Image 1 (cartoon, rainbow, N blue to C red):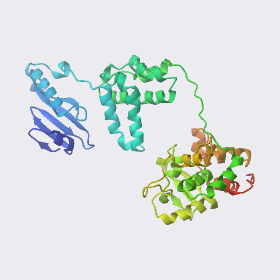
Image 2: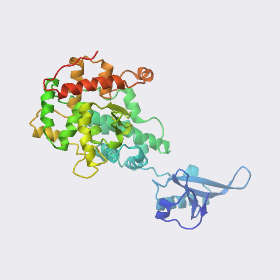
Image 3: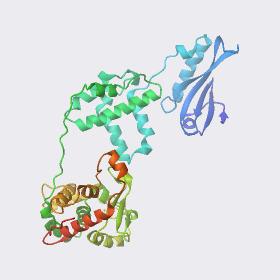
Image 4: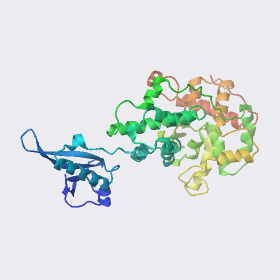
Length: 398
């Protein structure tokens, strides 16, 4: 490891590469190959000997440099040296400064930043804690948070905002687990204890349904869309035909499309279930896509800004302009599912996989590795024929 002597600065602490760097007075910054930064202080305890009879010289950890600032490290190092000079072993006499819940939460957010799907998802993770945990326990030392403090955060929203409360519970648990791994807490995580004891009341989840158009009305609606030139109309037509989610369609890039193979492959990071999904392209779908190639954009459904997709609200606003009330864009997935069951008599697993739903339990999925692409291609072709037909002909699938 590299060594330097002399006073460190805040900038050096943040930017030095792997090594061990002295600040003077026995204080060192240690930068691991992984990039983790921590403080240690080396002291010689007066009047105490090691096993070999030599003066007792010991290194003590002062915490990570992401939590303990340079000035704080210097103050703690001075405290340790004073104790050692008096013959007191810092291991048994030092008062360790415990970070607050909010400090650890901010640290977790930064450390996990590379794992977020996108910046918005990462910010939502922190915002939940900011709104419901920080006002109550944010300034508390992380080692003093137990079941009463966690309940203070969860109880007020447990029934009225149950989904938010569950996410909050998971995020508090993560923060406290990280605090324990860094040596700032002991014992069982209070979130786990609350769950195991059944302290909070059981909340029956009410299913949320997206308003959907009756499948019998889709051909007439699609014919109206065909007469519109707006990009939002083309995106909505494609959404209807594929049964895909809004985010999947609007985030669609030409790099995902193989017109020769008649296939659109949505990468796992853009799927709700984090699993790659292949969408068979029908004649009607390709008829929408091919003219858009002339735009030479990176995205398929380009918005007002070059190489950027339409806004999330574009298709919904188009529905409103068309005076189509009580219907959501997401609802077309339900429309397709109803048609597949009631009109096409499609096998359940084929219809569900067409919507990128998980079918069966973990064991069944382990053995059923096929995504039924060929069978789904037949179903989607029949759906396209129905949607684009003037009479809305019903086609059954064997």
